[in-house]
Structure formats: structure tokens, C-alpha cells
Image (cartoon, rainbow, N blue to C red):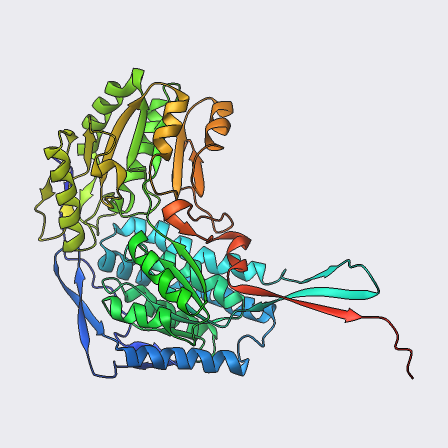
Length: 500
């Protein structure tokens, strides 16, 4: 396969990295045992920088700082409008530092720089702006009751929130938790993925400068399950907000259940994208490609399963074979690059192994299907696989890489059955010119969000989340606020006492 590879023409500008330390109680500090860990650049496979490697003692210190800040009322005691003004300042600071944040996120995750600027920083910043706007409209409610009573319901924060985020969208997926949790009045301990910790440290800087009091937001960096398990099971953590794989999410839910703490999870996905023969093929093919190569396929809401109405099945495969080799691929510093490396060597090997097993199972490799040797980075060619059995691993499990499986269908009912024939239910897509059909099909898809004639159409006001093995709870929109608050009903007896 000959890809439109883009190699660096000049040495990239070194991003301005944040301090590689833990952020606990409003102060930067080294890990308690002085431990450090390397952060690897996916584009080159070389060391980018290093950060503190936290211990369970550091997690304890971070939770203690968050608990003390919550109990003092220094944050929860502010009005929602006061908290909203601070989030608005955070939004402004993120906008002012777009280039610094984008460069760090691009280098750390292996994202093409244009995507880091336009998608990651833009969407993360808008989350703070959106929740800041909600802070000016939060209120309780008065309830009509029987008898001579007066009742009202007020909302209160939960307490200390553990925010645990994955490697693929560290900036956005931390902000989906941090912004509503802070607006609600909670304090936070954030554990980012071990491979991609840099944006979490930048957020800590920005929130501190915006005016978030000491101890309200804390960051512990480190790798492995030990830190995460300790944080999830900590008795002083009141809620866990988790994004990651279904398997780790299920384990975290069990730990959280032991102390009956609130738990929400956005987990794995394996979305079907249904392409009907009446769709505008030019628009649809762009959507199909974007749905599975966006973020190099490392997107829980990616569209890695394409279901094509049989009359156009071979036509679509031919168009994909012609088009994909020309998608700009390679140098993440080039503004035109669309597909970058996978985030780690581990992820590269996982994707390669799944494709090799698909080949052994009889898959037709329409295009791609191989690693790409480019600057020592973790690159895999965008791959299209056809003619696989319905129970093949590449179809039923989440590949989390730039791999698309294509299956034909004959009827609307068959398309719905194939789309739902997975344990996941995070996202889905429909490409058709018939809007009545789109409404009809969308209503029958097992997914938290369905896109029609597009993909990844996300906005802070629109909630997303999973059904089945893709988790529970929602992020985004006012719906997310409910998971960071509890209702407190207050009822007055208005009967006058007979005794004076």
C-alpha cells in the first residue's frame, strides 16, 4: 500500500510542557518516593519528557486534600454563580493557551496538530464555557404536597470525586468530568492515563490561575492498576467518574460497590455505521472514512463496523480502496495530516494482532493491513476488511485502531439486527436520504447516541454515554450534572401547635 505519507520538513517546535510533578493541595510536589516515569512520543517512539510516578501514599494525600477542601466549604460554600465565574475564567485561559495545550496534546497522544487544535482544545474549552453558563441558572424546586406542609428540593454536591480517564482523548474526557463536577461544588482527584498525563497537569495550572481554591482539584500521575484501584476503593471518595475499557470499568464498578459510592462509566464501543443504497455516496464515503480513522481509530464512539446495503457493497469497497491511500498520513506537525500514529507500542501490537487473526480467518484485505515504518513511530495503515464471518473477532470486539470491517445487508430489519449484534452500545450511525427511514431505524438501535448523515457530531449541550457493556450514566449536557449532585428534600409542617 502506498500512503500519502507526510514526513517532517523541519524539526517540530518543542511543546511547552507543564511541571512534571503531582498537584496536591494547590502545590506541585514530587512523588513521595521520588519516583519518575518516562512519557513516550508516539510519533517517534522516543522519550518526550518524564513525570512523577505517584504512590498509594500520594493518592491518600490527594484525597485528604480534596476532603479537607470540601469539608471546609471553600468551594461548595460558594454560590453556583461564583463557581461559574471561575469556570468561565478557565475557559478564557484555555483559549489564550490553545497553542501550548495543542502542542502538548499532539506530542503526547500522537494527534495530528490540526485535530489537537480544532477538536481537542476547542471541545474541552467549550465544556468549561457551557457548564459556566449553566451555573447562572441552577435552582431547586418547590413541590406541591398533600396536607398542610411546604416542601422544596435543593441540590447538593456529592463530595470528593475520583476522575479516571483514558489515553485517547485525555484533554476532552477529563474536562467532561471536571467541568460539571466543579460547577456542582465537588472537589476532585484526577488520575489521567499513565501514557498521556500532560494535559491533566496543564488543566491543574489553568484551574489554579482561574481561582479554584487549593485542594479542590488534585492530579496524581502514574501507571498501573494499583493507583486506580486504591483511588476507586478509597473510603473518602464519594463518587467515581470513569472512562476506559469495559473490562477495567467492570472491575472498578465492583470496587466502588464495596463502599456503595456513586459510579458512572463510559466504556468500550463497537459502533455500526449503516449505509443505505439511497445515500449520497460522495458525502457518505467521507463520513465512513472519518468515522473509523478519526484519532487513528482510538475513539470509543468510532464507526469501525460498516454495514452496506448489498446493491452498493462492491462499489463501496472499490471507492474505499481507491480513497484511503490518499488520506494524508504521518507527520503530526503537518497541518494537513489526518492520520497519525497509535498512542503506544502496546496499542500498535494489539491492532496488528487482531488484523493478522482476521486474515487467518479468511478476511479479504481491501486496503492496508500492515504496520508502517515511519520515523520510529507507532503507525498502522488504515485498513478495510471484508468477507469476514459475523462472529469474527474483528467484528464483535473493539479493535481501537484504524480498522474498518464491512458487511452487506439486504433489508432494513437485517441492518438493525447486525447493528445491535454486539455487547456494546455507545454510538451508531445511519447514512440515508430517506429521513423517515432514518427516524425509524434510529429508534431501534441500541446506542447512547445515533448520528444521521454524519459522525462525531458532538456538542457540550448534547449528552453521550452507553448502554449494555458500554457503561451507564451520561457525560455532557445538563444530564451530566445530575450524576455529580444529590437531591435534598426539605419539608415543613405548617400545622400550628395547639399548645402555646
